[in-house]
Amino acid sequence: MKDHYDVIVVGAGPGGSIAAKTAAKEGLDVLMIEKRQEIGDPIRCAEGVGKFHLKQHIEPDPRWICADVKGSCIISPDGTKVKMAEEMSGGEVGYVLERKIFDRALANESALAGAEVMVKTRATDLIIENDTVCGIKLMHLGKMHEVRSKIVIGADGMESKVGRWAGIETAVKPSDMETCAQYLVSNANIDQEFCYFYLGNEIAPAGYVWMFPKGGNKANVGIGILGSKSGEDRPIDLLNAFMEKNMPDAKIIEMVIGGVPVCGTIDRTIANGLMLVGDAARQSDPITGGGIINAMDAGKIAGEIAAKAIRNGDCSTDTLQEYEELWRKTIGKEINNSLIVKETFVKFTDEDLNSLAYSLKDINFTSMSLLDLLKALFKANKKLLWDLRGIF
Ligand code: FAD
Image (tube, rainbow, N blue to C red; front, side, top):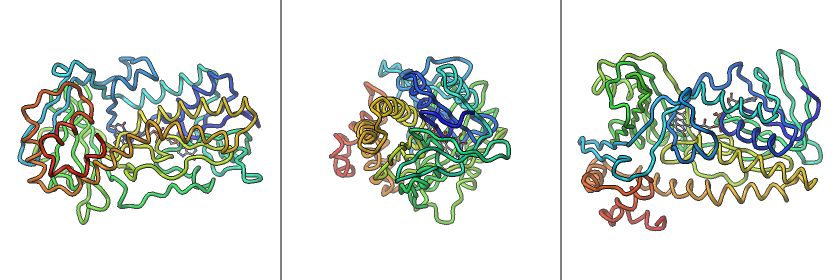
């Protein structure tokens, strides 16, 4: 470890690794630090990603792909099934990843691009001088160090402190958190080419239960419920009730507890000398809770803008504002649309959900996008979904 870099990236999740790789490829001197001793472990994720977007960042590798998903199936409270499959749409669907290997592969790509990667290294504070972030204080193997940089990229995930240290408001109200519990199970006995989503206020208040195939008759089975709706129900108790009813023969071999911010975009993700990406910038999707691709997309933009700022010799918010604008035009627009959808859907009763599912069950979708699903829903249920009209 040197005492000065162009860029320091805090956190080696998908957002951090893509930011580090992009900046290193631009010829910058990059340090990426990760507090855990093993990148990607433990995971807090259902590991589902869209193929098309993933391929923009990394070549798919069978070593970290557990299942090649051909479609998804939404099950309403009364059991009505809405199936969307590749064979109907001709489009590609997604993968279920082995994130322990995937995150490591991404970090390896950033190292191969020239970034220095340090594990078991925790950022403990920022160095701030004249209202500008100039580096970080870190703890490595029990020793404190100060390392300076022209830019810090905070990619430190859901529990991010980097933003807060820089005076950015990143707090998420408990009511805007999706609290999640998940089991990895064997003996799952589900179609390994489909992802399943179970809706219903008894099953998962203002949320859903997912079953994602993991290959070899295994599956990630999890639940996410909105903080404002959870009341007395703990996600783990609801998940256990679901498992007992729907997967009595499944064997639990791993457990994950975690939270996903579903608050929509925050006001600011930059400061002088600093950018936040991924979960640290609250860039996960309010309706699906998915954040891997958004983190990677934001990481790429941040890496490119870091290079531009350093080349121009101006790392103030004047230059970093371009990062803010670029991610809001793409990722931000989708997050805002999803927030409208989420706020509409959380008001629905089980009867509403049943009637929505019923209106879709015989439709042959021409694409797998959420937007097309919503368009079809809106067409058939204008009155119920009038609040969504601004999206189309
Ligand atoms: P992270 O992947 O969280 O990486 C942040 C890294 O920073 C971590 O490795 C952490 O150890 C490190 N770090 C934190 N603090 C410090 C520090 N002070 N110093 C050094 N390092 C630090 N998304 C999807 O797209 N698909 C899904 O199916 C999906 N399922 C999910 C299921 C659950 C139960 C949960 C909780 C989340 C799920 N998500 C899913 C969301 C997804 O996991 C995140 O959006 C994604 O990991 C965000 O990537 P990131 O790089 O921003 O942060």
